[in-house]
Length: 216
Image (cartoon, rainbow, N blue to C red):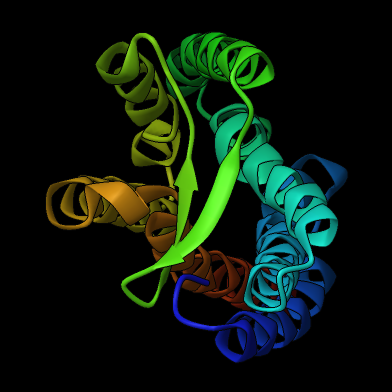
């Protein structure tokens, strides 16, 4: 998380516990990718906690390794994984076609951003009490547009909690870009991690509906 090492490690622990609970509620293999999202955010937040430790103690190698681990989640995994997980869990054929297209968009965004990152080394520093990931993206706005579209996939879900998750993802992304553009990567990933609690609520609701259906 963008606030401190302690906050990142605490968020990682909470997300890890919630992620294990969420995964235990997933009723089928097709829904498990979606259920793993809180656990993956837990790993990402742990990586950022180590980045804080590395930067604060001038351990450059440690900070560099874990900043790339964090960037892998933020810039490559999420634009691919979020639409794919939404697709796997979606029962509606019409909505699946939309999400299939968004999977392609997400892959394009991830490949382009990762290619740019490979050509221009990542730098990380603490500025204004936040982690600042400095990178060069030749087509910044085009890349962000593809990223924005890809992570909108849950908005097209058949399930209310997942639509809320997708809508709030986009709202937090836009708000973060507008208010804290320089700390966008770190700050938005914090909001997205917090919003993954909606996935737990989704699976709790699905489990209750399943129990009611079986009891009839």
